[in-house]
Image (cartoon, rainbow, N blue to C red; front, side, top):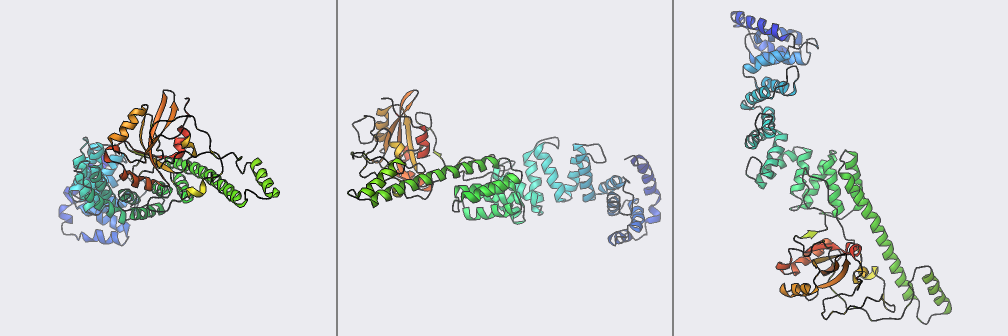
Length: 502
């Protein structure tokens, strides 16, 4: 910028001395020469009129210096002529001057000067200047942090069709920052930006519609993901992992999570690891179920009075671990409809907890939570047929009520299934009182487990293949007992179970 002091003096003299000379000239010559790319001739014509105070001519002259159109690349006079044009009210020059001051390009960085020129351009309806002025008020770079003024400028830019400003205005309406929260208006502006192709707005639409319209939510995630948006890829992976609006597909979920990681979303790594772990665990469960079914089929195919060869086959399979050792039949324990929800370590629990994926994914959203999904497995086929076989002998425990389950009962349940956990505490009498107080269904049950502090009792209800089935069953519980319910997987209850010592 060494040229500026000299130019300012010379320019002022020229502006004063040339008024009579240029007054009758055709100022359109400058614009016509510029539009036909005759920059050498345009520079001379534009400078003549710029020196007389023509804002557009000064703006075009500055543009030629910035872009080295008919000028030397190292000629820095663009800022000088932009200032001339800005002072004459040219909004684009004021906007460019604001950028130069905010970024410190060619001038000393100054937020106050940036705000001054942005505001001049914004008042002249320059949409980009309105958005940048809004951002300065939002962050406090304007000298004061004013969310209300930030929203007003974002809104003005949004109304002129600036897509990025539409997303910002919608976000502030959604969050109630600087304006009263209004979900309908927020969705209006975010949808406009999404329809214009803004990837982040498309993710936001997916989040907004996740509970209202899962099918449309999926479409917006897919549109954004096609643009390589890493957050959209992560959210889309969650959708397929949880089966939210689509059939659960862990393989596809893993592929999408990997794409999100490859696109630079480090938070998606935890989701990818979770999906892989769940997939491996499911393989183990499926193999166990296949083994149990094979056991039943082989047992059913060999009659009790079968030939010696058949009996030898059964004995061989038992030695190989395919069939369990035969034992005398014993009376089965009472059948309980209720199943166990995952428990907390508090005596009662205070909030409803579900081991399902989050239904709403913030565009800013933070790292994703774990989800336990049910599998479409026929429990009757997956569990071994116990007819003609003995069950493990439980520890002697004979409470005088129909709600108590035998010790070890929980370990015999199908691990991927779910149950509702209603209460967790150390007082068995209090458990029975709770059942009566809240008029719980007759099919609720409780079992006991050992903890360092002593015996704990877990009250449960139902056995469900999927989380949606468990969620529907909540309506069967009186409202007074729903505040502390958990949806828990039997696998988790089995991990927490410790056989009572006495």
